[in-house]
Structure formats: C-alpha cells, structure tokens
Image 1 (cartoon, protein in one colour):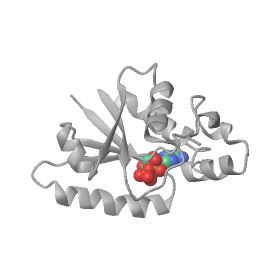
Image 2: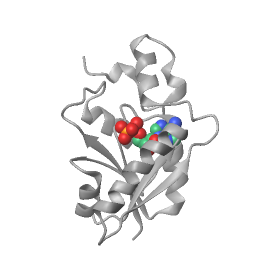
Image 3: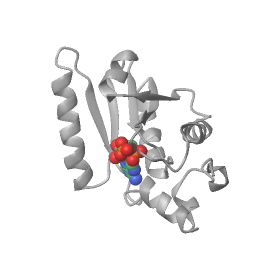
Length: 158
Ligand code: ADP
C-alpha cells in the first residue's frame, strides 16, 4: 500500500492544506493527516478541535484519516509503516525550509528511505496560512474565505 503522512500543526486547517490533500488523494492509497504535538507551542485550537475540523472536512474521503503524534515525523512514519511524507510548497521560503527537513529525514532513515513528496500550491491559495487565519480571527475579520466550512470560530476553546 502506498501511504503518505501529511504532517503539520493544522491550527486550523486551511483551504491551502485542503488543496494539497485533495490533489494527493489520487496519488496514494491512503493519506494520514497527522497533527504533530509540540508541548512548547501554544495553539489557538485544541488538539481535539483541530482533529474534528479535519475529520469533518474529509468525511467524504474514505482514504483520508486523521491522527496525532509526538516526536519526530520519521519515527511516527516508521510506527505506521509509511514510506512517504507529503508537504506543500507555497514560496521560496517554504522551499528552503522544507529542503533542509527533507534532507535531514533522508539522512536519518538511510536504511529504510522515507521519501518526501512536494506539491506546489494551486494559484490563488499560496497566500493562505494558518498563522494569517489566526491573526484574522483574533481581530474578528472574515477568516471564512480561507478555511473549509468545518472550521468555525464559535468552536474555539475559551
Ligand atoms: P507546520 O507547523 O509544519 O508548518 P502547517 O500546518 O502550517 O504545519 O503546514 C503543514 C503543511 O502544509 C506544510 O507542508 C505547509 O507548507 C503546507 N501548507 C500550508 N499552507 C499551504 C498553502 N496555502 N498551500 C500549500 N501548502 C500549504
């Protein structure tokens, strides 16, 4: 089975993430959207809310699953017997950042290579990021145009 892990914070999931997953669906037998837990990081949405947004967003996609993990992405991939990591690229800054991570992951998994597959963002989606969405939410702006319908602010943990 060709399985890909799409790792990220998804705080919250955006139409940029959605675009990458939707386009990757025909390429893999299964996609696991995996929320990396970082105890040092402060999130706007709780882990359960982020998972629920993703679950609802992809409820019509039988081959898309949501999970969470702690620690290195490659260790999570090994634990799930996955050989592909899926990432999105928006701009040159993403490229530089992703290149060093992908090369590190290759170096760390010499004997059992995990390949990182990159999809370029669709035009019109490259400006979307979770951090911009959070900023708009915090000032009461119209964040809805950047996120799937399942993401709604009334669900924020107070
Ligand atoms: P991280 O905390 O790892 O950056 P994110 O949830 O911000 O996690 O992003 C997860 C992945 O989704 C990354 O590969 C990122 O480049 C990609 N991504 C985020 N926004 C977009 C977008 N608008 N278009 C394409 N890819 C995107």
